[in-house]
Length: 169
Image 1: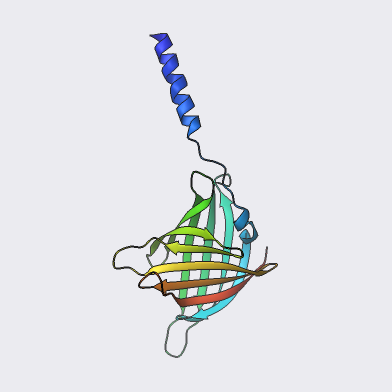
Image 2 (image 1 turned 135 degrees about the horizontal axis):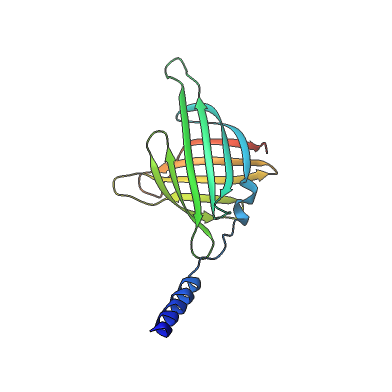
């Protein structure tokens, strides 16, 4: 009986370690790590904000925190937007998915793709919901363009907000 328990334990241990996830491969994201300030415009108007990217859970996930303010105008009140996004890898270690939450009650699940000078997050299509796309494009040392777009059909995207940020730390 003792031999069977020992054998079972060994088999469970081998199975558990065989299916472990590879270490995350954050190379495409490394330049975003830190704090950023930026300005942009779009449907809400001209705004400014702060965004940070930092690793958590022993670099297993990447956390983005964003704070944007759109000042009041003659026709609209001041708008404050806060959000949190967690980017995480698949079993190969590639950062392939993200989940987004904001102070307006939105939750968006994204898939992640890479281009030569960009990281593109596209929302998982849901019935009767627009498709969202968030793109970070490097503009040079310490500068990035951020564009948030929406599409009703998942093909024809319209820019909702776009801005440029400068790394501060």
